[in-house]
Length: 387
Image (cartoon, rainbow, N blue to C red; front, top):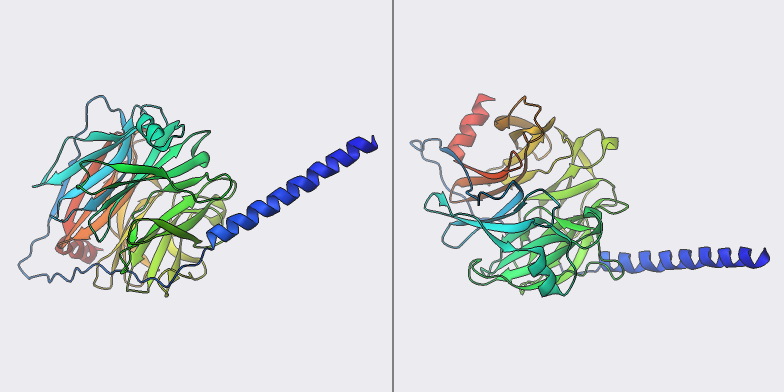
């Protein structure tokens, strides 16, 4: 009996020591310092003439007929102002046949989507077993290199996920250098991406990510001008705030908004602010918006307003909301709205970009397609004046 008691105590002590070492090392990685960074503010400043008419267009991205499900689109603007989009598709989310697909928007039309990353290919390139693929995020850096981040899972569900990084120097025709990001010295799991990176004046970028194992929390990864991962920093120590979406206001100021992954926060959309280029963030602030545990997307319109795409009540309603102060919002237009109770009536996971006076949005349409809507600022002004 004494021997068993000592053995059990030794195991408890050993476990506590292991936990202490793990937390200490993890905190060291999380709080790795880096030099002051500055946001690169997109140069829009496109004047609106009185004769500019409101423009609104929409279309579905063509996919191979065998695909039954599509979700989580991301896109980037190429040097020639065409778009390149990625998302995951297959028979159903989480199935082994899910792959990352890609399409181009040129001359007003999308090309037929083609698969660019499969779990087998990613497993071969990283020399690691890959069970399934998830959210992809694509980004064009200042040197025009494309960066693709793909979520993969080797064991278990999304809480056991990892982030893989691929690059392209030919506009997405070929992808190379697939490697798994090392974000933790021990388990290195439970990391996911969803929202586009933020460009820095140094040529590097910030990649917003989030974690889902044990505690759910958001982080910001810093990559240098060569596209190498350098350090990571938490937005906050809160729980259940995921999928951070950032709206840059100036070289040092930005707002970040979070998907609310917990009923304990009464489904309120939460936010934070930075005034030092993302080095530190303010306390968590509630907005006047609700969030039904759904991803959001934001963009600075460069005229004192911020535009948000979000779900209302549930994922059957996708709405545009606008703010002049970053905290108080109002709805101006529904992109999708249905009262159907069918499970496939979902419009979610928006992604938004603005260039040349046009605003492009991609989102999941009925869980089987990716929809593209584009409109100009006169259309936004028209919708806001109605509300």
